[in-house]
Amino acid sequence: MKKRPLILVTNDDGITAPGLRNLISVMIEFGDVFVVAPDSPQSGMGHAITLDSTLHIESLILDEGPQIEYSCSGTPADCVKLAVNEILNRKPDLCVSGINHGSNSSINVIYSGTMSAAIEAGIEGIPSIGFSLLDHSWNANFEPLKKHIRSITKNVLDNGLPQGTVLNVNFPKNNIKGIKVCRQAKANWVEEFDKRTNPQGKEYYWLTGKFVNQDKGEDTDIYALQNGYASVVPVQFDLTAHHFIQNLNTWNFND
Amino acid sequence: MKKRPLILVTNDDGITAPGLRNLISVMIEFGDVFVVAPDSPQSGMGHAITLDSTLHIESLILDEGPQIEYSCSGTPADCVKLAVNEILNRKPDLCVSGINHGSNSSINVIYSGTMSAAIEAGIEGIPSIGFSLLDHSWNANFEPLKKHIRSITKNVLDNGLPQGTVLNVNFPKNNIKGIKVCRQAKANWVEEFDKRTNPQGKEYYWLTGKFVNQDKGEDTDIYALQNGYASVVPVQFDLTAHHFIQNLNTWNFND
Image (cartoon, rainbow over the protein chains, first blue to last red):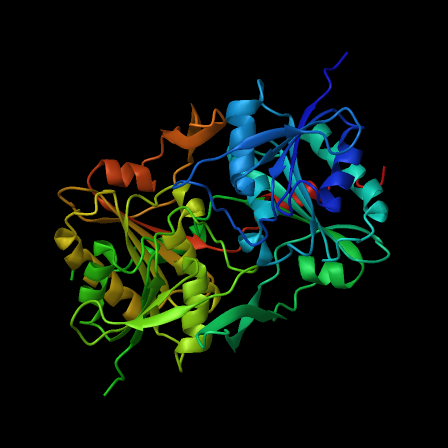
């Protein structure tokens, strides 16, 4: 009989987030679940790691169930590093991150703590998936996502993922029509800083912005999501722009 | 006569770092220099942005010179967003980040605040370069780098960079033989957590690790640096693993 897979579950919204609790409830169907998640929200942390400060972990029980859980004082990437290299006694067969409360489609993959945790696991050689729902609400309805998460998880456990590749999965808020394999849309945030004055008369800013998609392609994650489909983008962490190397070699660096 | 370029300078080691001060001293030869850099060290911040807190900036004069300088309470990515969208009245012609005290070659590009600032500028459509020196010392000697930084900067100002591409430049510590265009080496950190007990008896960890390069290629940044050359890697922020899309489309998501 095949051994039950060891599944590492993490996120960036923190260990109490409903998205994480719902992801745990699906993963215990597939294997032995080990949770190492931040003790506080870490959205927008990108691939930050804790170099200049100490890290703490706490064993805790939040919900009944077979899963083993730890909270961690660090970033999502720290959680994965600690789980894999310090807490677990064997390498996980799968890492899942999320379910994020909010989109990580398109350029958001760069800023996302959820995806950084998934990418960190990928760097460690673990097949890995980040899940996100296009609904920031704490009370978002994660129930309709579960059958799709099961399907994607089963595929990854059965087929594996090529070294250097992880999956970025985003779900539309309502009525999921199905799943589309996509590329990352070329879109970006146009920042609008909200400038205010504090009670002491000092100026400060809040970062806000408008998401602008100028990518007309019908094979992008944004297009799939706007048309009611969940998007699955394979993501790599070799950032080399290989297509530009030949051109760059014609530059004269000796002037 | 061509207008003098507007050059945005930032880093992740903070506005007082010698690497930044040396980079400013080169950039004032090329154009009007505008510095927006973190008010404290931000190494390892990855592509973190400040969503749950306020941002402050301060105008200041640290060195004599024609440059205009601001310190910012945020991350390197925040510095670029604030500079481009709030402080500057026109889009910079170039953004340079660094010179980082320490390597950002290979997988370090993912964790690097220096490179995140450069990538953020790239997302905003600005030709952008991150510079790093393989020497963590505060008193590192940046002088031998300057002629190469001039050469790379001149090339980027003359040739531009394709949309979606920025440069990651790393310099060896001693005797730079020349410049090589490279790809990112497939290497990673193997973490070794240093577990300690605090005076109150509570356990905590320091993140440490060993860098392991299993990439035997002679076209990588690590290879170039080990052989005395500066490495120039073109970096993209479309993370799509395009080569895996066709295979992924054969998966059955409807079981």
